[in-house]
Each structure stands twice: as C-alpha cells, then as structure tokens.
Length: 389
Image 1 (tube, rainbow, N blue to C red):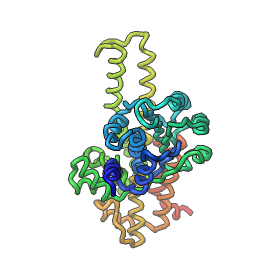
Image 2 (cartoon, one colour):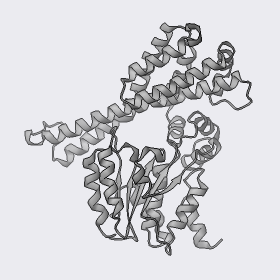
Image 3 (cartoon, one colour):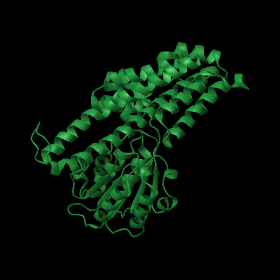
Image 4 (cartoon, helix red, strand yellow):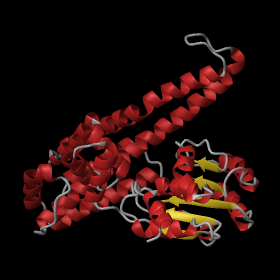
C-alpha cells in the first residue's frame, strides 16, 4: 500500500469497528475525488457517528494528508473557519438554529479545500427545521459538503434522505472498544472490557463506566433494583428509586457544565465574580438559564433512556438463560440472580417485559412524564400478565 494511503488510514485509528465506513470516507476525501455534496451517517447510539463526521470534515478540509491531524484538532475544538457544527442539548433542534446555519454554507472555504457543515443529532430537527434544511440541500454550493448524523435513515424526511449519500455504521465488538479505551485512555484492559460489555459497546458510555466509579455504581444499582422486584409495591419503589438514580446521573453530567457556562458568560459580559448582574444584562443571563433548564430536562430523559437500555440488557440475559442459550451474559456479575429469575419466569413473561421496555421508550420519546413511564413499566415487571387473564 502506498505511503500516503497508510498515513490516511492512521488518521482514522480512533474510529472503532467501522472499517467499511472508514474506507468509503477515505476514498471520498482523496484530493482527486469530488465528494457527494451531502452525507447521512447513521448508526446505533455510541457507534461513533459524530466522531466519524468530524474526522471526515477534517479530511475534506485538509489540503494535504499530512495536515489532517492539525486540521482535526481545530475542527474538534470548533475553531476552524471552514467548519460549522450544529449540535443541541435540547430535545429538538429549533428552526432558528438551522436558519442561522444555512448562510454559512454559501461562504467559500477560507483555508481548506471544502467548507463542511456537520449537524449532529439531525433526527432532533423539527419538521419545519427539516424543510428549511431541505431547501439548502436542493441547491448545494459547489465547495460545501453537508454531513448529517442520526440513529437511522427513518429518523429524517424521505426528501432529505434522497439528497444525501447514506453511510451506515455498525455496533463495534466489546473487545474492540476495550482495546481502544486501553490504548487511548490508559485504562487497564480488564476494567475496559467490563465497561465495554456493560455499555453494550456504546463508546462514550463505556469510557464513562470505566473512569467514573459513581456512574458504574448507579448502573449496578439499576440492575439490583430490578432483580429485587417481585411485588407491585416493590415495583413502585424501584420506579421511584430509579427516577432518583436518573436525576442524580443527569445532575452529575450537567451541574459542572452549567457552572462553567455561567462563569464564562458573566466574564464575557464584563461582570466581575460575585458582582450583581446589571439590569441591562439580565436578559442574556436568563436566556442562558432557560437553555440550561432545557438541557436538564433532556438530561433526565436521556438518563431514563440509559436505564431502559440497561434493563433491556438484563431481561435479554434472563431470556437467554431461560432458553438455555450458551451466549455470554451482558450482566455476568449477576449470573446467579439471572438464572434464578429465568427459572421462575416463563419465556412469554420475559418477552412481555421486553415489549414493555420498548413501549416505555416510545412513551418517553412522546413526552410522557418520566416517573409515570417507569411506574407503568415496573407494574408490568411485577405482575405476570398471564395471571390476570
């Protein structure tokens, strides 16, 4: 393989378990190639969609493969003049944010070969925002490339999907994630492997479980609470306890960020530490606080969704144990309790609980109060529906 090709592939080393996708993007970013004007990168949570999109952006911008790492550092820091990244901490990406982004697509690249616009979580765009984006994709500037990220193609309008080249990522193997955590973060392989297994190969969550003892303890608590449910009263108690777990998890992720944002905003507004905010600046501070409240709401819902993912892994293990499968357990640390539950429950009951978790995720996505979502789920876990017929 030519030396330039080897250098190009080394640039993608931190992208885990996606050799086919990396090959496609490496070829698309070659200097002699004119890439598609829009790309849609899809894949399960934690598969590395956003990281891959930013690497692709840097590869497109760099005028020489040797400059890619330097360009990527700027892209990742959101400081390169030829890249724009739209992400959100809100439940949805509002139309105003998309409208502000569109004009930047028509600027000529100032330093690189292309201007690249990345929209993370493009599935969070409202329908109106999606239609605004669609108009920009229909008349693409010559040297601008759009990169959209979403869990699946079905999460975007068909008209947007038809105007973008689709690239589907796969879930990496836990061993691949573990080796990456060991090489990049210096985490001992045994701890990295356990974290990758418990996170079900979600790269960001695996890193968190491997480096944050409190996050690992909260996940363990989730599994133990669920395994301890045998009556409706215990189910309601577990639902309330897990709501507190999710709230604590969300606060752990957002409180320090909120404080840093507030300090930086006040500093930029010229307000000394500890000083009162002048009346003429209070509107800006209130706007920041509203954004942080919206992020807290999303953080709680994301925390509940992580709990549902962990519960799904537990009852997947119960189902496999009940069917006598030799597959490895995700929650291997709880193997005796899982085997005991599999003996008490029928396969039909376990499948019913799995269906209940999927229903809970759907309710959460539709905005049902998180506490009610968990209570309804644990009522189903505690009560054998077959006995009620």
